[in-house]
Amino acid sequence: MTELNPESYVQSNEMKMPVVGLGTWQATEEQIETALNIAIDAGYRHIDTAFVYMNEPAIGKALKKFFDCGKIKREELFIVTKLPNIANDAKYVEEYLKRSLSSLQLDYVDLYLIHHPVGLVNGDDLLPRHENGKVKIDVNTDHVAIWKAMEAQVNASRTKSIGLSNFNIKQIEKILKSARIPPANIQVELHVYCQQKELRDFCNKNNITVCAYAPLGSPNLTQFTEVLGGDSSRIPKLSPLLDPVVLRIAEAHEKTPAQVLLRHLLQLGLAVIPKSANPDRIRQNFQVFDFQLTENDMSELNALDKGKDGKMFTIGLLNGIELHPEYPG
Ligand SMILES: NC(=O)c1ccc[n+]([C@@H]2O[C@H](COP(=O)([O-])OP(=O)(O)OC[C@H]3O[C@@H](n4cnc5c(N)ncnc54)[C@H](OP(=O)(O)O)[C@@H]3O)[C@@H](O)[C@H]2O)c1
Figure 1: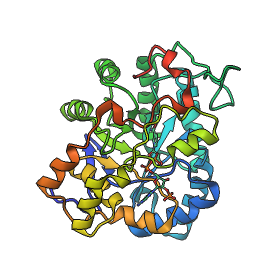
Figure 2: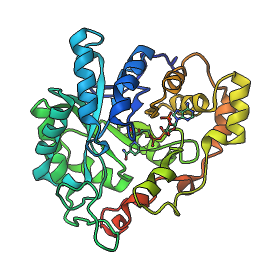
Figure 3: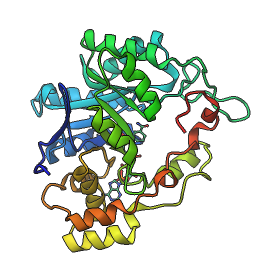
Figure 4: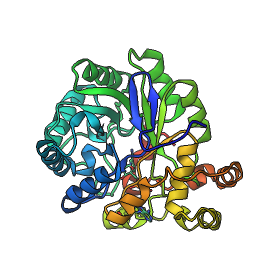
């Protein structure tokens, strides 16, 4: 294993993604500036956001402040955002990327992802629902056509690279077959209970880097789903941060459970984007370069994989997406 350090990155052709990024889903407008300020001071150079997180304007405001005062330069940061489900149509790609760039006050992002393979009906509502609570799906989603529009964004210099999120192997294969610019990255749920071995192997063979979302197991997911009126009953009651094996390994290395969970994924060759809005935890989540898990630790952590049963991001908030022909399963 090459030595991991705060400047380490995962690479696909031209794209170099710093291995630890700051997740920003559920970070509120009031929290963003402080969180980013602390993260940059701690060493983070990668920020993950999305149109649907509704915090791009706050991120843009904070970044502008940092650039204007010379705290950091644009080219030192790796900024990721995503095309929302409601814009999963070739005709919306440019418009939605431009909207994100305008909110972020940027000329380009480093990586633009298709957030999800399922398309929802376009409109102002990010979560359009029928009266029965099911989301309004747009069954005409055409991944190959969307990808062509994504490629055009690279040519227009609005994004340096493009990728996918939440796609399965079959869906990625279809894009690879017709791509002029292959996906540089895929962002998927990936943590100790849901290790995505098959997808990782496939991506390795195809020079696609993998970024792990919910690397700590997204401990706030159930509560968040309930607050937004989603169905939390299908979210497994699993807490990687409380797993006895994780706790034992953490104690042996005098590190926290979160640091062990993140380090495990880094040693598997992945990028991770833990979210925190808490100053101590933001710093803690970047302090993962001063220890190394042994082969034995890695084997024990690898053995905690529960495959599909470990997946926390089930239908939850998007009740009804399972009816879409591109529901990744
Ligand atoms: N592409 C997609 O579909 C998708 C889906 C989900 C997430 N994401 C991205 O991935 C990022 C991470 O995923 P996530 O936010 O769902 O889950 P996560 O990073 O696994 O967990 C975040 C939660 O853990 C808490 N936390 C953070 N550091 C901690 C620590 N050291 N010890 C104990 N608790 C800690 C946070 O609370 P505090 O803030 O209070 O610290 C927050 O509630 C998101 O923010 C988003 O950028 C992408």
